[in-house]
Amino acid sequence: MAPVDPVPPFDAERKLLELSFLHEFAKLLTTARNWDELMRTIVDRTTDALNVEVCSVYLMDRDAARLRLSATNGLDRDQIGVVTLAVGEGLTGSAAQIGQPIASPDVRVDPRFKWVPGFDQSQFVSMLSVPMPWNDSIIGVINVQAIESRTFSPEEVEFLVTIGALLGGIVEKGRLQAEAEEQLETLTALDGARAELLAVVTHELRTPLAVVRAYLDLLADAAVEAAGGSTPKPELVEEWRIQAIAQVTRLDRLVDSILASVRGDGLAAGLARVPFDLARAVNDTIGEMTPLLRGHPLRRTGTWEALMGIGDEGRFRQVLEHLLENEVKYSPEGGSVSVGTMRSGGEIQIYVTDDGPGIPEPEWESVFEAYVRTAHRPRGSGIGLYAARRLMSAMGGRVWLEPNGYGGSRFVVAVPEMRHTEGDTTGPEAGVMSEAGPEG
Image (tube, rainbow, N blue to C red; front, side, top):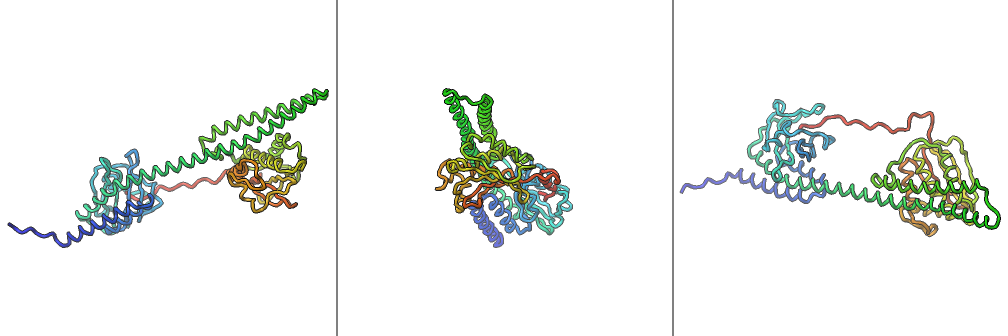
C-alpha cells in the first residue's frame, strides 16, 4: 500500500489557527451586549484574521433591493446607515446577486467596482466581497480591503466564506433582536406618554369642574335670595350662565385633546410656539377663575402693557389656572392672592403668590416631581405642578419657586418675550447631509 502523504505542517497550523479563531469569534459574537458591540466585533476581528486594513459589512434592506452600510472600521463611519448599493451594483452588490465571493486585486482598474462620488478611496487597492447566507437567502455582504495590490489566495477566500456563513445567522438574529428592542422602546415611550397625558388631563379636568361648581353655588345663593324677595340683576345671572357654559365647553376641548394627543407624543403633542398677548391671557384666565377667587382679594403688581410672549397660549393659561387654584387652596381664609409681572433676561415673568407661609425651600424642586405630595401640600394628586413644568419646558418657557420677600414663596412662570426688532421666531434650518460614502 502506498504511503499516505502527510498534511503539510503549514496547512495543519493554518487550519488550527482558523478553527481557534472561529471558536473564539463565535463566542465573542454570541456574548455581545448590543448591536453596536456585535458589529464592532465583526469588523475588527475579521480585519485581524485576514490581515487587511479595512472590513465593512453591508446588510440587505427588508425589501431585498438594496444593501446598506452597517459597520466599518477604516472608512468614513459617518456614512454608516447612509450609503446604499443596489443588488448587482459594484462588487458588493454583485456578490449579493450571484451568492458567490468576488475578489479584485486592483479596484482602480476593475470596471465592476462602484466609485462613490465625493469619497476618496484611492488608498485601498485590493478587495474581497463575500455574501452572508442565512437559510435560503443572502442577508448581507462582508468586505475586506487592503491598501496594497494583493491576490487573495483560495484559502483566504474560503476562510472569509466560512466567516460569512458563521455570521449570517448571528447577524440576522442580532438584527431582529435590535429591531424588536427598538420597537419595544418606542411602544414603551408611547405607553408612558399616554399614561402621563391621561394623568395630567384627568387632573386638569378638576379646575373647570371647580369653576362650574362655584357658579352653581352662586346660582343657588341667588335662588335663596329670590325666595326672600331679593333677586340678583338679570345681566349678572346671564353672565354666570355664560361663564358656566364656557367651562363646560372647555371640558369638551379637554376631552378632545385626550383623543388627539393620545395618538401623538403625549402631554406636549400639538404644542405651539407662536406670539400671543400675555396680558390678555392672564386677564381672561383671572376672569374665568372669578368664582374660585371671590373669597380672596386679588392684588396686581407690575406693568401690564405690551406683554407679547412666545409659546402656546392655551397651555400657558392651563398652567396659570393651576397655580391660581393652588393659591386659593392653600391661602388662609380671606387671604389675598397676588399676581405680578416683570421682564428679565429676554423673558416675561408672571408670578403668583398668597399671604400664606409658602413652601419651605428644601421642597421647591420636589413639588415639581410627578405624584409628589409634601407635608405642607398634602392635598391633590401630585401631578399638577409636574404637568406645569413639562408644559412650560415644551413651549420654551420655565416655571419655578422663589422667595416672595415676606418669609413665604411664590411661583414664577416665564415665557420668551417677542421682540419686534427681531426677525421671525422660527428655529434654524436643519443641516443637509452631503452624499458621500464608501463603495461596498
